[in-house]
Structure formats: structure tokens, C-alpha cells
Length: 417
Ligand code: NIG
Ligand code: FE
Image (cartoon, rainbow, N blue to C red; front, side):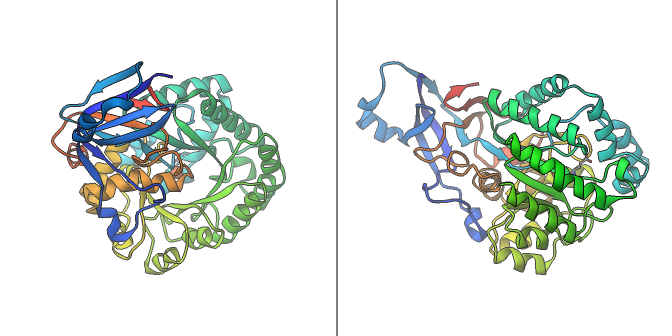
């Protein structure tokens, strides 16, 4: 593979020491950068970087066959890590969007058969090939907007057959895409119609049939539960996550999104790698998280789209916690997976500084999806996963310019995409 040198970089953003796995509290407001720099990518890894001054004094290490990119006036970032998505789905749900504009809530729409069950009905009709094709084109869009690692959940299957179908599509995307992909089993996303009056029966199916079949094909890295009123209780969440652990699936939780339901407590007690959403998190949850290795993760797209209260992002950071940002890309609550937009919402609505949102969407979200060794920062030896912006004045210009496409070149696994 051809090596790449990027020269005259106006600013190289997000440099971290190799041992940094996340940034918490006041550290989140520090974003280590280097002005007028170069970056060398070799054998799919970050090989070296430094100032142009250093380069001019010692340019000899360059390969004969190297692609040279001039980044005058441009910034270089580590690729975003999007640690929470539902990017495999069938069809869209804009009719529910219109219902919400007319005054119905997400919960009211779900109660009349819409919501997740609507997507499950659509997914049941779609073939594996159709699901793969539509997800592939969504992923191409995410790559253009700077995402380099993506977690994708099942959870629109809600039957053994359809959950396996979704997870096999994710497995194929993992193999084919330049993105680094992690798969999450979210069979506990909703109770399907067939089990409307028998949630226990559905949980038994999850635990006794789905999990063994998924583990048998090695289809899931993580296991997730939607811990929420009318979905799964705290106790059910703990049971499902602990059983998943026995099959090698690391816990994650959809927690405190529409009400305070105990998802954070459940997640922390099971050693979850992340707890996500957090709109209704309280002071006790902050205490629990402070004594854990769990990454609190906010999903600004879903809160924005559903008009939810802002998650208490400032309270989390100010009490010393780390915080990650992900997109929650899905047809019901976040029809966009554009991480730049997520950064803008978090800055504008939650009062997170540009440095904080960039750390949240790179080093911290890499932790939340278990890819810290290869992603999340400019660090020698990490994977060559970066993007180059257009000519922009500063890194703050990214969250500032909401909805504007500022990324010019994407390099994933050492190759220009
Ligand atoms: O993360 N909260 C639950 N699940 C998704 C929404 C799924 C849907 O509405 O299709 C979320 O917001
Ligand atoms: Fe979600």
C-alpha cells in the first residue's frame, strides 16, 4: 500500500499519548493540536507527525513511492467514532414525523403500533440483499461526513430469523466497508406484537434461542437493552445483559431517554462499556458513573429530533466524568448520522465547548465502542483513519458551521476513500 504524507497542515487536531483511553472532566476542554505540521501514514498506520520545521530539517525518511497531499489552510482530524447507531433498517418513518408535528408524542405513536414495531414490520419484508444495499449507501454518506468507526445495532428484527438477518448484514458490512464496524445485539429493543401479552416469553426467546444462535455465528460484540417504561425494566435489563455477558457480548444500555428508568444503574452494575441517551439522568446517576468504567454517551440527534429535554452534559463534565457523543442514526429518532451536526447541537444546546465536543466524538466515543487502540486520536501506531477539512479558520468552525459540509478528503485504513 502506498504511503501518504500530508504537508503544510494548518492545524493537526486531537493528538493524544498512546496510553490515553479517554478524557474526563476538565481534561475534555484540552485539545492538543500542532500548527503548521505534517503527518505520514504508512502500512495503514499513523507513522509520524511533527512540525514542518522539523520536516524540513530531516526529510530523509520519506519513501520513494509516496502520495503527497498539500493541506495548506486545512485542518486534519482523527476520524469520528460513532459508537451508537441503528444504521441497518428498512424504509423510513416520515409519516410518524408528520404525526409528531401535529402533536402526537413518540410514546403515543409507539402505542398505536408505530415506532420500533413499524420498522420491525418493514424489516421483516426486506431481503438480506436489500438491507445490505441500503445500509451500504448510508455508510457511504457517513464516510463523507468524517465517520471512521461505526457501531451498528440489530433490534428491528425482534424474531430469531430477522435478528439473525440484521446481524448477518452487519457482519458483511464489517468485511466490506473501509469503516471499522462493531455489532450490537439489541433484541431487547421492544416487545414484538406476537408477544404483546407475554413479555416473559419474549425474554426467554432472547436468552434461550437468540443469544446462543448469535454467539454460534459470532455475530455480536455487544448486547444492548432499551431500558424504558413500556419497553424493558431495570431488572429485565440486568438479566438480559448478564446473560449476554455469558455469551461474550459486552453490555451497553439505552438509558434514561424518555423517563428515569434505572438504565444507568443497570448498566453500571453489569459493567457496561457505555450508557447512552441520558436526558433524564440525575445526581445519583452521576455518582454511580463516577465509580465505574462506563462511558456516559449523549445522542444529540435523537434529543433534537424528538424535542426531548437536553441531557445534563455540563453537570456530567463538571463533576469530573468523561462524555462521549454518538449519532443514534435510525429512522425513528435520528434520521441523520452526520457527526458534525451532533457536535453543533451539543455545543449550541448543551453548552459544550468545541474542544469538549471534538474529544467526545473521537477519543471518548472510541472508548465507548472498544476501538481506542486504533481510533480516536492522532497517535503514532494508531490506524490511519483521518479526515482533512476544506480551508477553515479553526477547529471551532466545525461545530459553529452547523449543517455545512466542511470535509474535503477522507482517509480510512491508510487509503483515500
Ligand atoms: O435510540 N430509544 C430507542 N431506540 C432508538 C429509536 C428507535 C426507533 O424509534 O426506531 C433510539 O432513539
Ligand atoms: Fe438508539
